Image 1: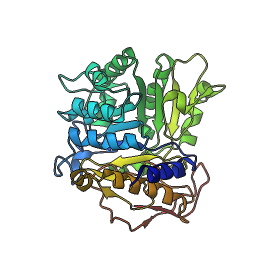
Image 2: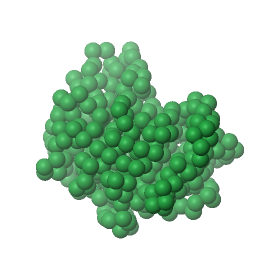
Image 3: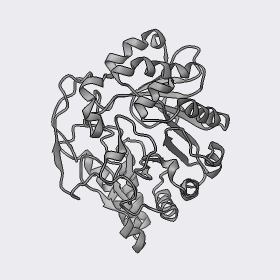
Image 4: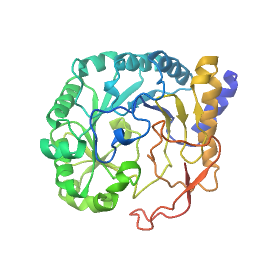
Length: 365
């Protein structure tokens, strides 16, 4: 592909008005905790059944992404910090994307012995998302299958001390609503963005969804005293590209936002290129346009692979079944998701009880 062809494809994507794509890497499926809505150890691909990408592979992918003007890479898992080469991976992504890139990670914050936030920041990490669902040790352990919220809060404080941007991810469950509100209250004194996330009816969470799901509309009244008169914080200022509103009550150091993937599912601004541990890139959940990157790494043809990814995202906008609605964060991160390349299939219609009032046919894997 020539530079002119790439420029034309980039211009076509820019004309859609969406945020420019970023890379969302799942580095592993391993986790030393066992959250009730995730339960990775019960999944068939748990462990190292596939050969994961190496730090060198991530460096090559990041360099190619930089040529496509990508300036952000996010890593998750599993628990990404369990990788023995996590510092090399972060450095590879930071070095490949170049100066000014945004390099982030989602972690439960209970860093393994010998690994520190200082080391992660030194490798090039610029922001961190910490999963924290309760401040009470016992209740947190019941939700997450272990871990210690005190250690997670130490990780948050260390990151803030290093001037890293910090977001806190808290999945709201009906049985633990008060815990979620206490987590949200942390934003009063700390310059963090707490994101209250709706439970999704996917994977292991399906077993508890009917009992535990609370929509954003149902949660908001519990926050009304805080949010009345609260000013909206732009996603650009927060360094966030995910959907949702972020509000900063008067006098608060931080903000509270909602990620409402079940009640207000929309992909109007979706821009993630998800890449699984073994290197399958997934540009869109509406089209099965997945592409394995390892053959392109071996043959030196990543430029063609990225052209495919950008075209797939553009094609989505011309899909008559799209309508802009689907489960934004439908779980495409792991290698366990088997998808026929190039053949779209249908997902059930969104509930007519959605607080956004959206219904209609949607496509997904």
